[in-house]
Amino acid sequence: MVDVGDKEVSERVAVAQGRVLMQGETAALIADNALKKGDVLVTAELAGVMAAKRTHELIPLCHPLSLTHIAVQCELESDPDTPPGFGGAVSIRARVRTRGQTGVEMEALTAVSVAALTVYDMAKAVDRSMRIVDVRLREKSGGRSGAILLD
Image (cartoon, rainbow, N blue to C red):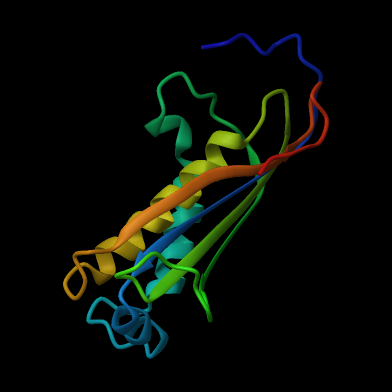
């Protein structure tokens, strides 16, 4: 584990995003809340929040952090830009904040990844072709690096 003891405490924020591509029919079932396992989007958001809080238990050498805020948003894309064979998508965005000596990038990425896995798990009975794509860090701020916007 990296020693962060000499780093200054600062407000640290990270934003990550990802997508789950699916058949248009699957997206319609999610929109209608018609899947047997329940409300996919709300469940995925909750799973993302829970995962962010447990990142240090999942990623070796990751510091346990006292997170001050976690927001996970899962939305059906109204006009998804999808590759051939897909007609729907769920976009996932996580914003994580803490006041500490190390960043929250891993927590934001974990939140998006677990939310995406939750969407997959809840809809796999009707669509085995789903694809989790584009999980990435979009921005981070705090610490020596300051604010960084990524694309």
